[in-house]
Image 1 (cartoon, helix red, strand yellow):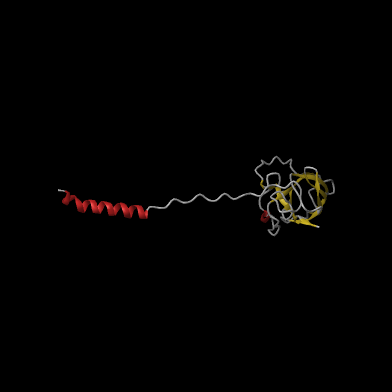
Image 2 (cartoon, one colour):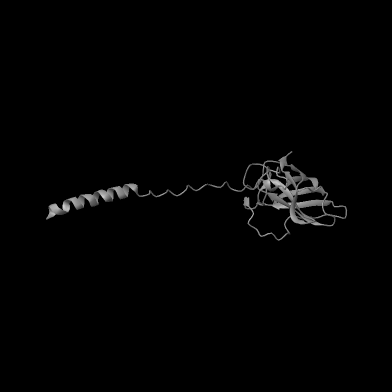
Length: 182
């Protein structure tokens, strides 16, 4: 009687071997990518961003960046803004202002976290006000940022964008400039 089951057992054993050999192998977990730590200080004493128009505006200006207590101080002047308008100056992830609308600069960047911003936009961060001539004097702090050194919170090589109250395009990217060490 065992002889009559032998072919069936051989077939079952072969099916198990083939089934195991063709089963998908478990995918190893991806290796954790170590994120470099945020820096307490940078390696540069000064940087500049020359902002040029974007989205067909006439906005332009120059801001100087310097290390300050708690981050990086941004000071300068911007012109061509909507007169008596509220605008925002924001740090963006990529130092690329090549797109007509400056979308090439990527998402807003949070230097305190060293990553793209996850903060809801209240419109308060980076607020600048233009006067009756359309000129804004900028004096802001980028909290947690450093100048130079390549840490995730380093702002050198990132873009500063002016978001404007342009007629028909509230919060449009109206000017863009890349932060460069002087």
